[in-house]
Image (tube, rainbow, N blue to C red; front, side, top):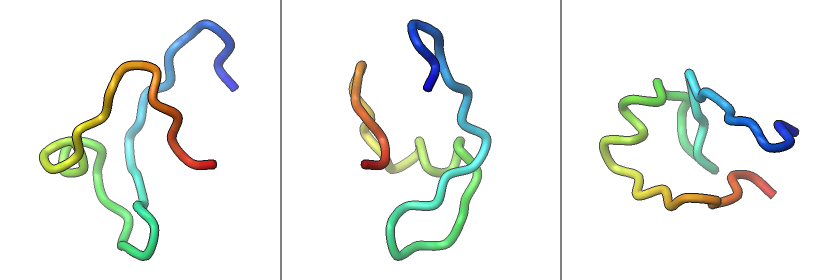
Length: 39
């Protein structure tokens, strides 16, 4: 939990996919402000 702060993503692993760098993930992802990642 970050409270009111921010979280810097260095790597992500989408469901059923391999781990990748955050910049590669952002190349195809369309995150929105205040979107919750995970569950």
